[in-house]
Length: 247
Ligand code: BV8
Ligand code: ZN
Image (tube, rainbow, N blue to C red; front, side, top):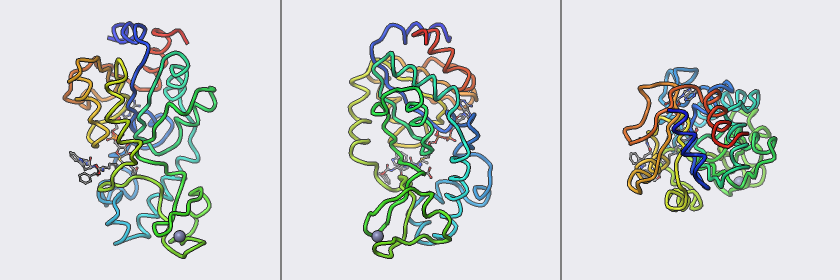
């Protein structure tokens, strides 16, 4: 299966990539629907929402503070780096569902063009005022129990897209246009349950274009037609990229 996927990737000029929490798992970041911490009491879909923030802003901030600590203690893994190397060999668009900034860091370290990455769910490394929009690195405010905006006194919030919030226009346009523009899709470490991110899988199927899915859990592959590579992103991605484009 890996050889089949590598042969396909070797034969195209462009590729679309969808990344999920599984890509950052080996950097020590728990996957989104994992049984960890605050998440025992709440499901992510109940905490990562504007309603939760209005109802219990301190709990929501405690959850993001806990997540930010893990992110800041993490480093890109070999899966992130392989993707950055691939970006130097193929015309890539990466629709990144992760908010941890690790893929951007890997691209910077590998000298790859970060412009290839569209982080469609925002970034946990940034915060902004829910009232006036003024932004800052999340580290600057995360120590406060309930961070308030220095210019208007409004509530600061993490600069992520919550459930029930629409994605940025650039992200929506990319989700719409990129399946038509790219020759194949590589979906890495995602349960493909979150929309509209997951829409690229059926979109590529409808266009009759190949989909390669990488997942460590054989039960987690999507219901869409794909070449399935079972294994961890940190070990499979370097193998796939080495075999396909020899980097
Ligand atoms: C919107 C930021 C307009 C916050 C996140 C259509 C149909 C059904 C529902 C909807 C729909 N349209 C909209 C919805 C509602 C909702 C939604 O999708 N709900 C889901 C739960 C059904 N979508 C929205 O609200 C979106 N907004 O559409 O606005 C609108 C509004 C209302 C109603 C209609 C339309 C906004 C969605 C964005 C939410 N924000 N993150 C934060 O992080 O705090 S999404 C969140 O889930 C994370 O970003 C995460 O990246 C993302 C996806 O999860 P995964 O990455 O797939 O992670 P998961 O843990 O699920 O899976 C990990 C996988 O990796 C597993 O398969 C595992 O086996 C594998 N794995 C583990 N280790 C490894 C591995 N694989 C390889 N190697 C390993 N080592
Ligand atoms: Zn403000």
